[in-house]
Image (cartoon, rainbow, N blue to C red; front, top):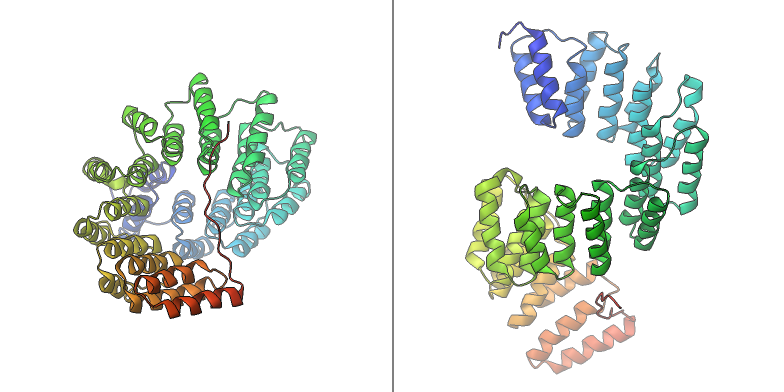
Length: 460
């Protein structure tokens, strides 16, 4: 590329940013800086968009300095891009400051700030801004209203609030569309109000609004969480009727729903029929196989994913395959995959990875090795990590480390009796009945709660 041709740099950075290749856009921008190309106001919005989507707030702040230095702040596109970048990075005060300093406020800038408020839980502030729009000479459009609805829905507000927003939309001459309804359904799902999510879906259909792939893929996880496979099959059938069965997001959600409901064969059929798979599809199938005892198939799928689509591997992929290794007692393979994740794919281990490896080592009887791993963790172990260790100690009769694990669990769950009961089982297996009696008296004296086991089943 000719180093002096600024238009080509602008087009290249803009193309990367528009198609979601945000890091690549920033890399091209860095090359442009090294070439000493002079800035202009046309390249800044694309770079700021990339910064916002990779949480590159520091980089965005540097761009903001360039905006001041080059006197670009009067450009409405640059100001709107700054608001969007700061909002996505959670710097709402800076976003509001840029917005307040704009001489000519436009709808794009308002929507960017409304979105920032909504995404970070400030739905009332978003509403206040929308109410002020008339003073700027602007009318909210469907994007504004949908953003506002999503904010209140995610916050978990009552149905009356959402109904009021729908009414305000109509008063302002904007009819709720499929995005509006899907935002409400998504909010209910995120707040575990599953029956209201289904009720809203039925209400949407009664208004003559056809669901999109986003609506279907939002609703299917509810069927999985409630193990309502019949409801899931009904939605599957409806997706087929309206021509959405082959949509990658819908099919991925169906694979996840069927595997979580115990119908691994149906999940497998859908998975192998797919011409294209995303990360969520692979992860759902690997998890499904691992949790249904098909551990060798799970590992085979992981190997296939690594060979064919290695760029799609993420932290959940490794959680799934480590679960399979743990259930299949493949200790050496599990440990090698844990290292592969860090060294080749540069994925920083999370708590769920450590819990899986502790469980893996514990099942193999390597209690001391599992405890040593916990001691070297750069993050504080949670109850799942210590719980995996305590369970291993119970299975292999290691009283000393069981006491350590139980102590940490009692600090994390002071009101739970389950950990003390598990520890008492370790003592009972060792024949230390006096200690068992003392532990049970302690549970009774402190009135610790033992939660009963439960299972979701679907009635006829």
